[in-house]
Image (cartoon, rainbow over all chains, first blue to last red; front, side, top):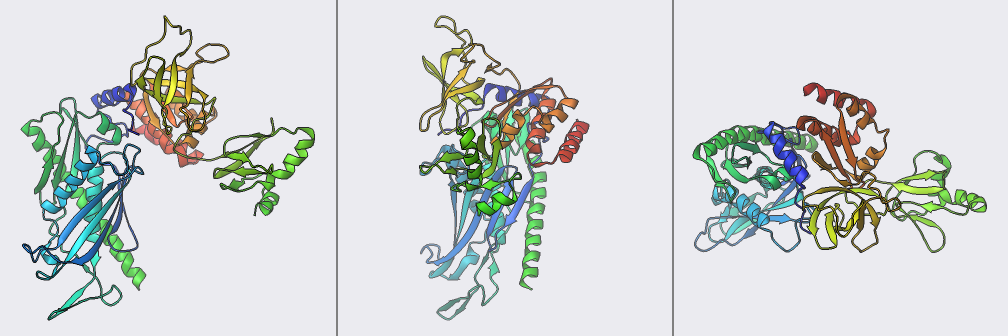
Length: 281
Length: 246
């Protein structure tokens, strides 16, 4: 069943509240909802909670033969799953436009920005490379799936450890996790998506829109940046036209947000690493 | 399991799970059956063929002496329509004879265009798509679309049902919505001491709030949403904190 449009009352109230400078959940315009990261027991499993939006990412790897034209390059694939668990608006087996957009954006943000060193995944050139697969499951939908999914994906990749390999001549040995400490992936930088929603002809800009705000917005834009202030990707699919200075303004906001979020992610990863060390002793 | 439970905690909480038979209540059923053989089963309980009663929901077993009623109090998020309940819905479609109203259940519900106070073929209210309606469920059968009405069927008066103007509506769990319907609910009383507001609560978990300005409405909505798992003292401090920040 398609999710119903919000009622006229909700629509008018949200717009009136925005005119007074208030958002329905009591946030300021440029505030993110509280971000919570929890790690699974094995490496590469992360659950992200952004307000009521929940995303689970799981990284797995396998050894496969590379393409003959790129013999040293490993694979990085993303698999997004928008199930009816997240919202009754999603159906199994039928991709909505939103779903396509979300998975394309994540792919663009992660793969095309070369966040992961795919050359480093090579074991024997032309013979064996690692293929890394990131499964992203959306568990609860309360707006801003892209940002939550992006945070989940990159945190999972940072958290993931692949089995160690040794190559002696032609022989390749893959050590189990018990034999040798698994090794982390080499990640160049941490791209993070920041989504904006526009109201009143772009006069009012909201960061991290909720589901209701997403339904009412006039336009949206997603910027992908890293902590070095490099814009990795930018996506604006439809909506109202924007002025150049509005986009620049958004980038400035995004830089601040990315710095905050990166710090949060690294803090969570360190805390988890410490916990693992303690439990191993 | 249930037999030991019943002896220990006759009057305190008794938790049942789907499939649990209720021998704990059987003795009292038998006692009563001599004097008043009628037992009324509410939500979450179902009689089986051999006259035992089985729970079909997980929750707390409740009993009211008046009318010898038994039911299971549980919490869920998805609404299942039941006749006689008041709900808040959004008009999502219109046909010649019916409005289609989204009440948050598995299917949309039907509201007859004449099911309003004083409505006749000539003179009937016209509600646009997106209108918020407070209505009563008149008919709800399994596997059928529920039917709604915006008036009291016996008197033909509106009884407060009809469209809700202005304000804001938000979704809560069904358990919280049921608690909010109790006029003694703490959170509504505390909020009322600070801010005057209007409210309509639907059994489908939709709560409508209207107050003098948007900031107050936002505060009330968030306070109610937060209050679900808070104790009385925590509610008081939370509301105080929110009001002070205003």
